[in-house]
Image (cartoon, rainbow, N blue to C red; front, side, top):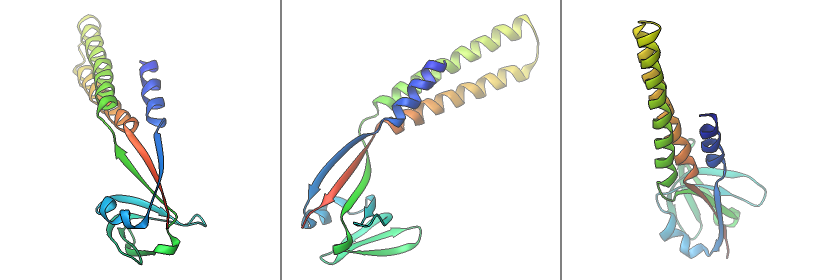
Length: 152
């Protein structure tokens, strides 16, 4: 079980990254509605959902409200893209398998050693937690980090 957990955590930390360069004119069509992070040359960044891309800049809706980033400041855009559900399903199956084993162990132990009904509930909770952990670790592994350098 520890090896499965280590595998899932390692898979979630290894994020595929893709870099490319695009012109300013192609930003309007491809990024409207996406949640992105915009960086300038000095390292300052803005994060939010793209409301619009105009000739003068990008308008983002984020936690701090509506923010406008001037075109001259935009050097790089980053966003996450969900690739496929492959690792989500593998993680879910591994977590569910580990949880099923925990439930089986609890049933045998309860039958032979104790009649504590809390043991079964704890095992079911562990099974649900293991399946959830596997799913979300797999989901993180299925994400691809896209970095777009903005050209003239």
